[in-house]
Each structure stands twice: as structure tokens, then as C-alpha cells.
Image (tube, rainbow, N blue to C red):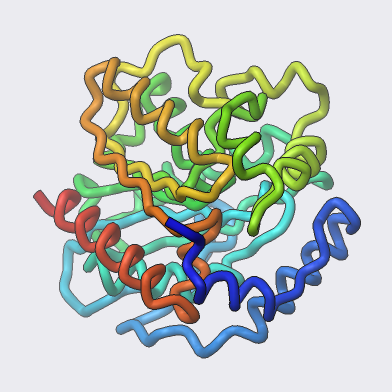
Length: 303
């Protein structure tokens, strides 16, 4: 099916310059401007800024109930752009639709802080959340990680690291159009490499700023599909978009996890582009997709 017309319109209205023409600072300013121009985010019951082992974070609660499941969330942006503030609306929608508390972590960005800084921060924030869940009014036995794009990469990597370290215990993972293989050798890069939305050239720009050497792209903490073993990882929900260069690697990861005996709920959204959760305010189909997936993830986390 064609790209959702509402998303085509929203992309045209944003009229963004390609990140390949920008410095990291300029790309961040452009991303912040988009966030500032967005409609007001949906309300939640409570929002609190806090420090997760020295990492700035923001907690969203959809209600006052005690012992809520807790989702530690990592924003997208190619490890270079994006922020807790920029993912405000997404995290609020996720909290409301899932019925879970959401802790959004402000991990360090490249190129000032190259790999593995973001990975270290993501793992530290998750470990802190597990240790302090009760203080947050959440259930440590129902702790999940989630993220979109580069944030989905971090969520997948945190699960690998937690398995190797013997903790923290992560009940589930939600990977939203994740970066899974930084080598970028999948047919969807050819099919969708020119956009709309994310392009193959933009992904190369992000990865170049994130890693120090080309060889680091083969580190499983950059490309989690290259881990030697995927058994014993938390059940996963993996969302992909029809018109996304990252579509095939996300689906390949779903296949890899299934082959390792991991429970997987993989969902491809036709007519959608990379980043479609961020178009929920502009495209009813994107809002519905977010709501349905988040609701299903929250229900699975509560069981």
C-alpha cells in the first residue's frame, strides 16, 4: 500500500534539511525545533524529573495505582540527536496506552560521547530502575525496556548485557523500528534508502558519528543481531514499518530470536515510515498503531 497520506503531508510540512548536510549541533537544533512546534502532548496522571544513577530521567505515570509495571525508555535519533523532551509525547502516549509507568532516560549522545557511552548509560539507568522500582511505586518483577530506532538498539543491547551480567531481570523488550545491524546490508536499504523519512545516507551519517572505527559496527553492542547467542533473552515485541530502510533487519532479529526459543510478537505496519510513532498527532493510523501495540505490550507485561 502507498505511504499514509497524512504522514506524507506531515513530512512535507516539516521540510527538514537532510542530516547529511548538517553538523550534529545543527541536526539537534532542527530536531528540537520540530519538537517545539508539535501540538501539546497528551496529559498523564503524573510527571517527575529525577536522576537515575546520575543519568537525567523523566518518569510518567498513567495513574495513581501502586505496583505499576515499569518501562525504561530510550529515545531515537541515531545516537546523535533526540532527547527526553523530544520524546515527551511518545512517552506519554506509551504510558497511557500501556497502563505502565515509563522512565525516559537522557543517555549521552555522540559524537561528543561515542560508543559505548550510550550503551553504558542505558544499562545503568535500567539497573537503577530495577533497584529503585519500589520507591517509584512500581513492580520490579514487571520491568521492561523499550526504545525507538537507536533507542530500540539500546533496549536490545541492554537485554543482552543483562543476560550476560545476570541482571537486572528484564521481563520484556519493546523494539520500535530498531537499529539491529549497523552494517546496513539488507534489501530494505535498497527499496527504501531514498526515503521518505529516514534514508540510507542518513543512517550512514548517524553510525559514522556513533562509532570510532568501521570495525565497531560488528560489536554486538552496536549490532545486536551479531551476538553469538540469543537464547535466554526476554520476550520481545518488534515493530517495523513498510517504508523503512531498517525494516528487514528488525524482522531478521525477530527471526533470530524465535530460532533461539525467545517469544516474539513481530508486527509490520504497512503504509508507515521510520519514525511513525512520532507522527501520532498528525496521522490517525500512526496513533492507532501506537495505541494498539502499546496496549498489547502493557497487557503482556502485566501477565
